[in-house]
Image 1 (cartoon, helix red, strand yellow):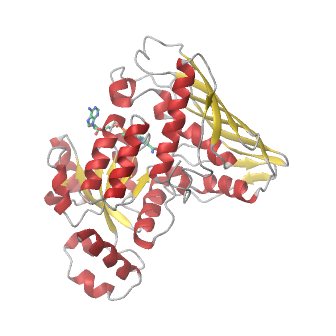
Image 2 (image 1 turned 90 degrees about the vertical axis):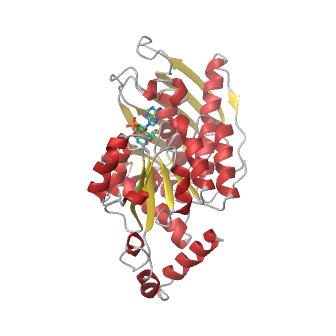
Length: 383
Ligand code: NAD
């Protein structure tokens, strides 16, 4: 009932009918309004590590349709620092134990899960059960079964689910998707997609601990390399073959260091991907019948850059995280498309599992079966 009320409330606001009068009756945090005089959604960040601190929270100062309303942290020392910096009232601060009480908090509309991968499913499900919309960071979960549980919890509780896939809101990536849609350069022939960085820091970090990360480079950066091949061609793969290499096994004791994989697509297009924690690489190159397009870098936070066989691409730069969170808020408030639905996260995890299986079976080709467009924005919701 509460959810229905909130939805019809925001619908009323989005039409601009009686918005001022309604806002006047709400607690302070709800009075935040965007330039169209519509309600801004309150986001609570769960996990205040590097990504929340340096990317998401600063971006939420600039978002038009949402703002940082609350935090969930396991580190008490962060509470005051964040409360002061972002004007967060004490009643909107939670820890991992009392988190479920967020259900009663009308300031929080969306919970954004920014924790180590092993904690994504638990907190996404608890957020959905508290009646909050969910943004889940990548990779969606530890395995496909957990992705299913998150999707089900969000459906059962009538809340929206989006992935933290910022690139779908980013103009260079959107241009690549337009080239594919409009066949600007003709049929796609072959692609190379790389997402990798050199990891040399603390050997005890959670990203190198399989219990918390689920895997190494493939779980961390792999989604960018996989996604490049998928949105670069506009198709889901029908088969994948993969190989794993390690040149620093003493450091990468528990997780994969470097993985390469070859993708087959129904159209006949071929894709090569590389992901690694042992080198720096970041690009997408797509060769077509009548030309080519390339992003380099293709998935960093710093401005992307792109070229095609017709010339350089140039787009204004804005925070990708700002664009991403505003797009998800518009999905909730105005029924705009969900640019990175949960099924997209699950689709990528199906591919990740197939890559690990291929490696475990000595490079054996794995067949993949997706419904056309499964996991794309507004694609079918069953495989
Ligand atoms: P981080 O290590 O900087 O922060 C992790 C946070 O989780 C910390 O606040 C830590 O206190 C907390 N935490 C709770 N339980 C923990 C435990 N058992 N072990 C370790 N930390 C624990 O990590 P991060 O870079 O902020 O990444 C968080 C999530 O965000 C990951 O899923 C990552 O893949 C994702 N991420 C996404 C992007 C992107 O561009 N979309 C970028 C960076 C990170």
